[in-house]
Each structure stands twice: as C-alpha cells, then as structure tokens.
Amino acid sequence: MSATVSQPHALRSLALLSVVAPVYNEEQLIELFVKRTCAALGDYTFELVLVDDGSSDATPELLDRLADQDPRVRVIHLSRNFGHQAALTAGLEHAVGDVVAMIDADLQDPPELIPTMIEQWQQGSDVVYAVRKQREGETAFKLATASWFYKLFDKLAQVDLEPNSGDFRLLDRAALNALLAMTERSRFLRGMTVWVGFTQTAVPYERDARHAGETKYTLRKMLRFSLDAIASFSHLPLQLATYVGIVSAGVAFIAIPVVIGLRLVDSYLPGFGSITIAILLLGGIQLIALGVIGEYVGRIYDEVKHRPLYIVREERNRPQENHLGLPVGPIERAGLPARVPDHVA
Ligand code: UDP
Ligand code: MG
Image (cartoon, rainbow, N blue to C red; front, side, top):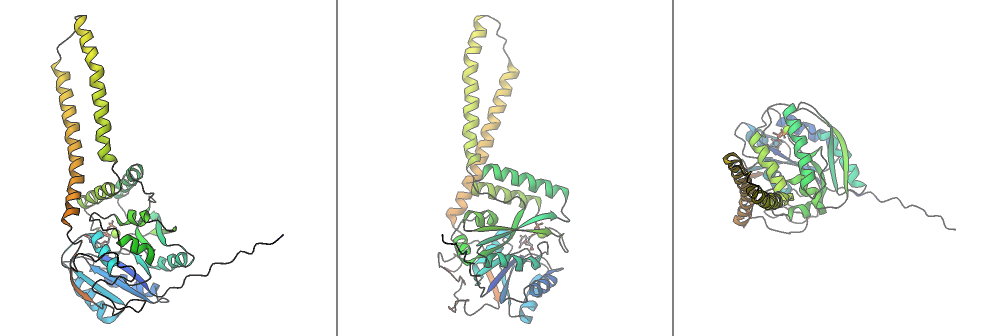
C-alpha cells in the first residue's frame, strides 16, 4: 500500500500589486485614504491608481500633490464625471500589476483587508471578493433597496452574485484580462467579475460608515445602475412580456364562449366598466412591455455607437514599464492586448 503524500501548493509570489480607487469630490477624506492605504500595504510593492472622476472640489489638486509626494501614487484625471463604474474601468485598464484590488475611496472598505485578500490569492484564488458582515452608517432605505435589488437580481440573472458583496474585490491578472475583454458599455463590474469564472473566494469584513462627505449615488443613479445590472445579465424582463401576453390572450379565449353562452341564455348585461378596465389593463401591459423593450434597445444603441467609456484628461506618475519589464503603452495592460480601448484610437 502506498501512502499518498499531499504536496503543499507553492504559494504564488506577488511582484506588483495595483490598488484602483475611483474618486469623486472626496476632498475631505482622500488624504486619509491614501495614508491608510499606503500604511496597510507597506510590506508590498504596489501602485495606487486613483481615478479622479471629474471632481469639482479641491480633490484634483489634492491628488496631484499626493502624486508629487509619492511616486507609487498614480493619478488619472478624467475629462468629466463618467460615473463610478466607468472610473473604475479606467483604473483597471491603466493598472499594470499582476494582482489588482478595487476599492472605494471613501474608507467604507477598509484597505487593511487587502493583505488578507492577497493571502487568498497566494493560495490560488483568482477572484477574491469581500463580503460585508455588517454595514455601518447606511440608511434603512439604502439597506432595504439594496436587499430588494439583490433578491431580484438573483431571480433574474444567470450569475451567482453574493448578496452582500460590492466592488471591493481583488483579481488575478488572468481574471482581470478576461474582464477587460468584456467591452460592454453598461457595466456592472461586480457581476462581470463573477461571470469570468476562475477560482472565486469570499473574505468577510465589517463595512464601515463613510468617513466623511455624502454618498455620490443619488436615487436616480442607483436606479440606473440596477437597470444596467439586470439588463446586462438577464433577458427575462423581455421574455416576461411574452408570458403576460400568453396569459391575457388565454383569458380572452376563455371569455369568448362565456360571452356567447350568456347571450344565448339572455342574461347578458352590457358592461361598460368591465370593458374599460380590460382596455386600460391591456393598454398598460403593452406600454410596460414597450418600455422594457425600450430599455434594451437604448442599451443596444449605446453599444452600437461604441463611444469610449471615459476620456483621460491628464495623468500623473505613469510608469515606464509594467511588472514584466515591458514598455508601457498608452494603455498599460500588463497581459493580453485583447482590445485597444477606443480613446487611444
Ligand atoms: N464615485 C465616482 N464617481 C461617481 C460616484 C462615485 O468615482 O460618479 C466614487 C466615490 O468617490 C467613491 C466610490 O465611487 O470612492 C463609491 O461611491 P459612494 O461612496 O458615493 O457610493 P456608496 O458607497 O454610497 O454606494
Ligand atoms: Mg460609499
């Protein structure tokens, strides 16, 4: 009998870590964020890629000053506000590390968790996502709408997204390149990182309250983001119109013999009310179905226009080469050049 000796896996070694954070009007806390992140990552060789999403307060100047003080801090100024997901994408496309962490700049996601996420990566996980055990400082409204959204998304979409996970994630370069090869305009990055597959691992954490300032997600932005998420990952709303149509047509077919029967026994009562209700109901259903189709057609139109997701105004501390020693181009992708983003062409 031969004993099986389990061979311990060699740990992956990290050459360069990229930490990507989108920043929009965060003058009150951006310096603290950079300080805490640099302190938490002291043991690693890292770059901190801060994407200024068209801030209109003192954030751009503060970022430039931080970049002057520390060459590891890279700053990408976008030409205007393109939104959280586009800013995050800009950071991911510019990151040169072999491992990339995405984090919010408002200190709701503790940068001190990144070393724990790196440990999981070293043990072989390609996508490490942080799952919030607790959410401090969120309004009851935000918690309730977030929970409804995740329930609905789970029912409709084909990807298994952990309900309490956000965009606080760490990706191996292979998973990141797969993600960057997804060129869609409506971006729901947390869903996309699950869709790419690879080995996925969860790390629990306590989500803090925002350190200062207010949420940059207005109700409108949140609604748009949820619709983007559902439309990107599910066709069910479109198919739903078919099901509702079949049911109401079925009801109409059953109603025909009933009406004829009632006529024959002469107990037929002309009913304006019921007809009006039926017309309004069917008209309403048809308009809703048209609206649903409109949501998808609008997104198809956006895809066809193929506009850039974001436009870079200026960059600070751009590296000369990536971690493989290869010269860095306009877009510093360290792996497969799967696509040249539009704003370069
Ligand atoms: N953010 C951004 N562009 C936007 C909105 C937000 O870059 O249009 C950034 C913001 O500075 C923060 C992160 O995205 O670092 C998350 O935003 P926020 O904290 O406002 O969202 P919440 O945590 O309330 O969902
Ligand atoms: Mg926040």
